[in-house]
Image 1 (tube, rainbow, N blue to C red):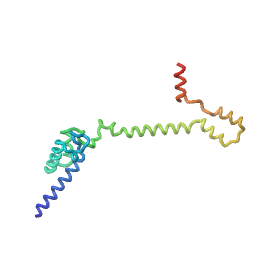
Image 2: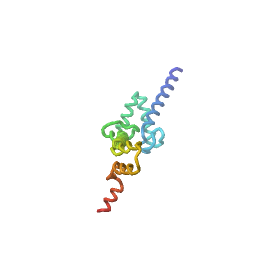
Image 3: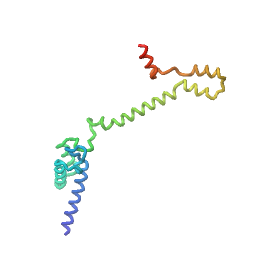
Image 4: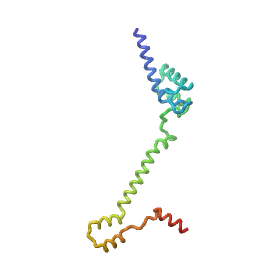
Length: 158
């Protein structure tokens, strides 16, 4: 009786490991489903192959390696990190870094603009309207050469 229970327990372990591996392997025929979900012939064969490999005593890593060698790296849902896939893995970080750098540059430029600092200094000082107008003329920065109106004027002149 105990031998039968051990066999049932071992079969449950094989089944659980096989399902775990099958969820992480892409069906080569369907492409969008794992071999666990797919009913394609190749998926059924791969599930059987995985169970046979487990019964032979192979580790999960060995099974993944065999599948990768036989069917290519695309058969695995989690491709490994190497030189070829580095751009794919790091591109979100590079985009986020670029956006953060652009934001920091704009914030720094806005804070260090001398005209803005000078305008902030005179805001609390009581001035006559004529003095205020003169100060604003002196302290207002010239229009940016990269504004849309600059490009439009340059295009019209040519």
